[in-house]
Image 1 (tube, one colour):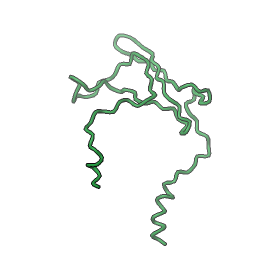
Image 2 (cartoon, helix red, strand yellow):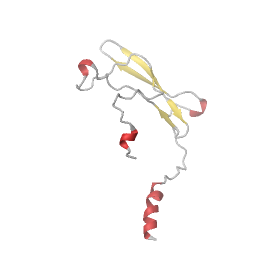
Image 3 (cartoon, helix red, strand yellow):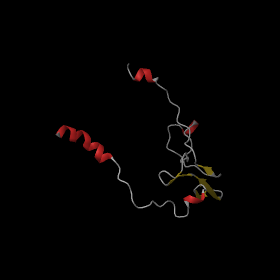
Image 4 (cartoon, one colour):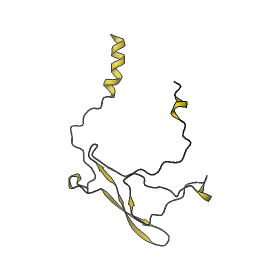
Length: 116
């Protein structure tokens, strides 16, 4: 009996409790009106002050605003490779509604990983 309880206990503890209070999203965004969430940022470069808009997605299932694929640094190519990250200067609006491309890597066939 103790063995069965020890097997079931992690499942019981891992089961999420339902939040009875409704969740609140971004204070300036009303999820029922169907528009995508946006954030306005002012960027200050050496030569100008620019305002950009970042547009994300609203996920009704988790009641959250989501922003995917926002670059946080210059790409590490050419002379920037193996150096500290450099700040990116945003000059255009960003649509953050899908993940950025994955880094290239060597794919190992699944048959070699799982010995059948």
